Amino acid sequence: MQPSTLEEWLQRLEGAHFKAIDLGLARSKSVFERLGLQPNAKIVTVAGTNGKGSTVATIDAILRAQGLRTGVFTSPHLRDFNERIHVHGAPCSDAELIDAFEKIESARAEISLTYYETSCLAAALIFHAAKLDVWVLEVGLGGRLDTVNIFDADVAVITSIDLDHQEYLGDTRELIAVEKAGIARAGRPCVIAEKDPPSSLISTVEACKAKPLLIGRDFFVDESALAWSGRWATMTGECELSDIPSSGLMPSNMAAAVAAVLQLNVDMDLQTLRSVLSGLSLAGRREIALVQQRYFLFDVAHNPAAVGSLMDHVHNRFPHRGLRVLFSAMLDKDCDAMLAAAAEWIPQWYIADQSMNPRAASASHLMGLLSSHSGATGRAFATLEAACDAMIADSHADDLLIVMGSFTTVGAIRAHLGLGCASQVNRLC
Image (tube, rainbow, N blue to C red; front, side, top):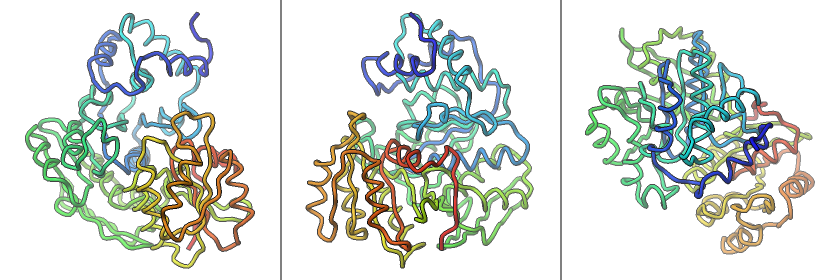
């Protein structure tokens, strides 16, 4: 019997393929061709180890501010699957998703698809029907063999290159860079926000005859803790903005987003651009919220590089605040290295089980790892919600309460505290 609700469809998709992650383009490309569609908009594809979500959000905000209609595909989601597919700033409806899943189910026949592959194809169907100006697509894993790469990017963006998903992408930055660079296309721009890119990234982009645009060479960022400036080449010269208030999103990624939009030959009004960049925030990405008279920082840092970058941000922005952290992550991540990156800075840890998530590291496992890092003490809890309540009860009014780790961790705590899908940002200096 065919599912009738979105929840039923998602449950079916979770077990529809024999592997949760099965990289490759052949299956999804074949089904897309059977659906009889052709992309009917410009396409911007964003890959990278960290910073993809904030870069996509910046590109989308700039384009919509200039009056263009956009579709955005991202993954994973914080709470609701609908977050993955936005049409002109709004998440798609259950009905739209169900209709897309039904069409894909009919077209795929004997072809088995992963949950992620079906998600990406559903986004393409919804975007095609909406007759948009630009599709902004976030790579899920890698780039070269990710389903998003069945679409030829008019502009490719690569944010950062670091160690994550080594079992799929390789165990060095050089190898991982080759996979990320797979989204570049001949004769088309590839914006690179990585400030110290592996040599293989540039050589791979150039080998496919794409046009690399490098931060520090073709566009520039000057950043401090509270404000940043950017300078970009345009068709008619240069544009420059200074003293853009820091919103928590990384200036290098925001600048790369501007560079990508410029490559679409969008005629941007600088005052509008300044307004967009100054006010932009994204749920779960260095997001500050005031809840129950406590300041929280939410961040989906779930690899060592992301945690290290978050710690730099915290100490640059909030050097005099007491710090506490609620943490949970997936067992297949380098949890020990993540703990090492933060334990010397954060003395109080609240570690939680995620009993409904079989991929999550247990609290006892994480506590064992934490015990090897001097200066940090932790308490284990049966649920994320219990850990959050204890952290609030133990804290002082001037503490910064950090919630970091997997998307499921951040999403669950945001929901527990009554925060919606949209970021609710308060300035904290």
